Each structure stands twice: as C-alpha cells, then as structure tokens.
Amino acid sequence: MRVAFVGKGGSGKTTLSSLFARYVARQGGPVVAIDADINQHLGLVLGLDPAALPEPLGAHIGEIKEYLRGENPLIASAGSMVKTTPPGRGSRLVGLDDPFFADRFTTAVQGFGLMVTGPFSEDDLGVACYHSKVGAVELFLNHLVDGRDEYVIVDMTAGGDSFASGMFTRFDMTFLVAEPTRQGVSVYRQYRDHARDFDVPIAVVGNKVHSAADVAFLQEQVGEDLLVCLEHSPAVRAMEQGRAFTLEDLEPANRQALVTLLARVQAQEKDWERFGRQTIDFHVRNAEAWANRATGEDLRKQIDHGFVFGERPTVPAG
Image (cartoon, rainbow, N blue to C red; front, side, top):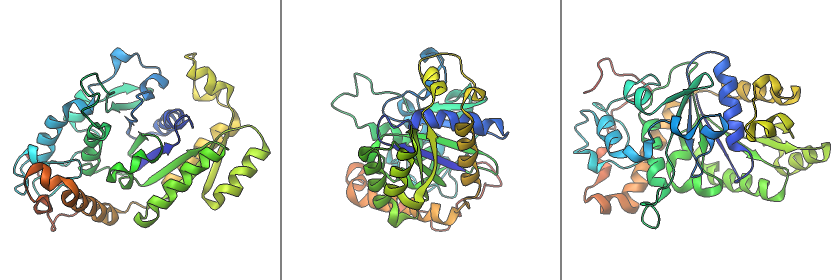
C-alpha cells in the first residue's frame, strides 16, 4: 500500500510520517519512507546524521528516467520522459527491493528504508521548480509494482503544493494531518475539494490536541472524515529535540492512534485500474498543457493502451 501524509506546514505531518513508518515496520514486511517535502526533515526526525542520508532522487532524475525507460519502444529517449510518463510494455517495473533504488537511493533507518528527493541547492535558486525534483518520486511510483504487505510512506510537501502534479493520486490512502485551528482545517477543505473528482481516499488525523474542546472543534469542522486524534505529546517533543525515543515512550492514546491508522490502510482496497486510468489522464494533461512544447514531441504517443497496471513482467526489461 502507498500512504501519503499531507497537511499545513507545521502540522506535524513529518513527525507522524516517521512514527507511522516505525510502527508499520515493526509489523513485518518491507517499508520504504520517502521525504518528498521541500523542507527535508524526515531523516532528521528519524535520527539520521545528514552525512548518512542516501543519494537524493531529485539530483539523478536523468539516470532514473533512463533506467525506468527500459526497452519501451514508445519512449524514444530518456530526454522525452516527463514526471507523468506512464510505464508500458518494455518499461522497467520495479519493486521495493529493486537494486538500482535499494542500493543507491535508500538508507536503512529504524528498521525500514528511507529515500529522499533532496533539498534545493544554490544552483536551483531562481531557475528550478521543486516539483522537478519530486518528479523523480512520481516516476518511481508510476513504475512501482508493490506487493502484498509492502508499504511506501511519503511525507508530501505542505499545503496545496501537492496539487502541482498528479502525484496526489498515486496513493492508496492519504492522511491529512490537521491541527485544531482554522488554518489547519482550511488545508483539509482545499485538499478535499481538489481530490473529490479523483477518487482519492482521504482521512483526517487530528494532531497536537490538548482538550475535548479541540476534538469537538475538529469533529465540527471535518465531520466523518476525522479518523483519529493524537494528543499533545511530551515524548514526541523530546524526539523532535533530539533526545532518545522509542515507540514505547508514546502515550497510550497516541500508540493506539498508530494502530488505528494502520487498520484504516489495511481496510483500503488496492485499485490498480484507477491507478492506471489516472496515470494516463495526468500524462495527457501534462502533454497538452506544456510537455509537448517542451520536448517537441507528442507525448500522448507514449501511452501503451494494452499495458496492464499492477502486473509484474515475466521477464525483466533491459
């Protein structure tokens, strides 16, 4: 299953991504967490020294395109691939154990793998869009065939920036982290309204809740989309300050909240048909809006209408 954590900046989505990844990894099965936020803090929250972070995906998007292109005859070159390019027959489909991504772009931490898009550099300032870096994650997700009891957990960029590409549709479940404030629920409404027409499953996770009045506020503003609330946590604050932390340090109510989140994910059906349909839909949108002009090609011709999403090839491409 693929899980996204989204929300207003400062809502705690990075912290909750890290806690959920730790918890899911404890249940067994492969877990990969991806830091796709413009503020690259997931590794820090997990206790990693910056020198221990893996190679950033966003800095190697050309190599990633060439690898994923495989021997797909509909894609003339890696240069004609964009972030929405869908896989087809001959493309290189990958799993969480794919050596190209696992050996170079993944670092083991807290019992699971961490991948990062990488931060903005001085060379990027004023000339590059952060979504060009996140495009590497979108391509990875488009070509990923995740198996049963495998989890990809993505810490997304804050607020409405998630809608600058089709990546918001790449997930089986989206958790929107909302503080009990008007600003927190305003991001929820924006996300709900944008995602409504795309069958994107959303559940709201209340965070930094101090009282029954906070819970009542979220219930009034969010309604049945409110799944669970996490109370204000001294243990989490200590973790964020760099002190030693384990899941056992969490308050009982907050440990139970992680159980609830995983149960909600496991109750969600995998829908490869929707995934494939939306992959193609957003590629056509991108092609017609800007990508055809940028590449000088009609990128709609990259679509392999006979390709079945979710099936692993019997013989690896390439």
